[in-house]
Image 1 (cartoon, one colour):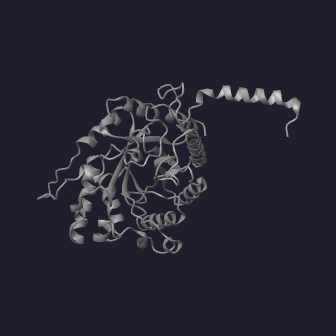
Image 2 (image 1 turned 120 degrees about the horizontal axis):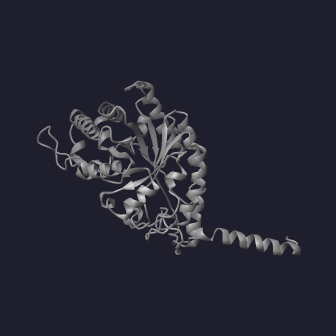
Image 3 (image 1 turned 90 degrees about the vertical axis):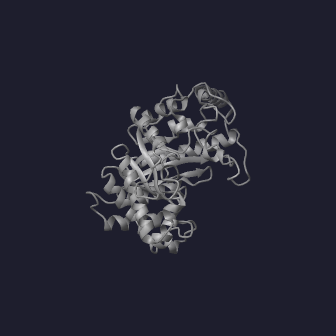
Length: 377
């Protein structure tokens, strides 16, 4: 209970607080007075912690979106145009002289480097978004395809990138504790992975070995989603530990340089699960990057299909703040934080019809409460 003579003081304090933060008062539908080109750059705020990144497409170049990227981020990852479905020959070549489709990826890399930004390659080997012919044939044929593709693509970009997501999403979903504490090889995708079906689990280390030989200086990452799930995290931990113990001096260092935690989260994700996995991976003494961060706050993928409104915007802001408090606490272990979307209008979940409002900017590029939660968690 509040004593009567304290009410004027309390009211004054509340009024001061409301006025003091009104410039940050963006809600689900409102706009704020501060714009993306006036707000302090995110990369500057976190310059003593980790790199700050976002995704890029060729259509972003020479537009306001590229200006936004240059202002707030020092690192970019191609959302699609460095995946095999975009760069590998679309049909099985008749000869060993593969006609790669590098032009769009080259445009992204050149523009980013000219702007003083760093570039992450995403991704070399994946069960999805890859021409089917790459994984068609006997083990010898498919392994030759893998090593040729990785060697020639990584070689093409050698010296231009800071990291490659060499293998993406190799672990299957629904792992149990017994799975996670057994052999990591039994935790891999099989029915939906042409690489594993044709070659077996060794395809992972062969991909990393080919990448290391093609570009000895680029950092090589294993990248996956739901790594805040303890069973999946343990399986990845076991895999990286095993491979690095067997290849401790591949080009002068352990074969796998880092683990990419995709971090597609939502407002009900328990931040403690994220911290637990970061702590686990840090014991491997590899780099950790948050590679595809977004936090859904509305839409079909959340229970009850909640609407996007002021309450959802605030819940999202609170969740981003909680995540960034963890990231800052583990800054000595985290190399990079990359968001997977510039604005809600072009976010991948908007484009696939599921909604979610997962980014820091509204579709009109106005700043959401989440933006300010990231600037000061």
